[in-house]
Length: 155
Image (cartoon, rainbow, N blue to C red):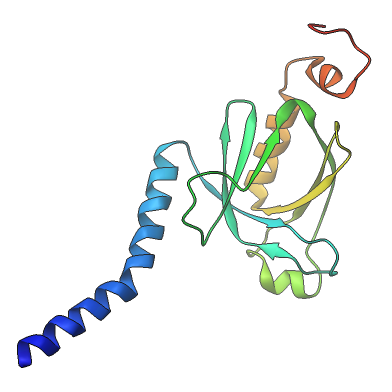
């Protein structure tokens, strides 16, 4: 009888710890695919100061990939393409945002030049500089091809 209780207890412990172990292994795998940094994304802009989801992001060639922090998915939830993304502005978190987001992380707003959709993300100050450098280092004229539907193919 004591062995049965011990096995049940160990089974319960394994079941409780398995999600945390899987999240750790996922983060390690994503880190191995390219350096990760903490980045919160505002998925729902309808509530002032709300709609923020914690996550991590990484640069992969011409894209910025964002992953939810507490997800098992190995695919990014959001992908920004460098050639179609434009910096709009930056601001300091206010009210509830200051509590919900990472410490000392300004909010950067970017716009997709093709769809016109804006997105807000919160990053550490060093990562804001990296994002701006990454956006500015796009090949000259690459954003024109993405934003000009009337341009001929291969222009």
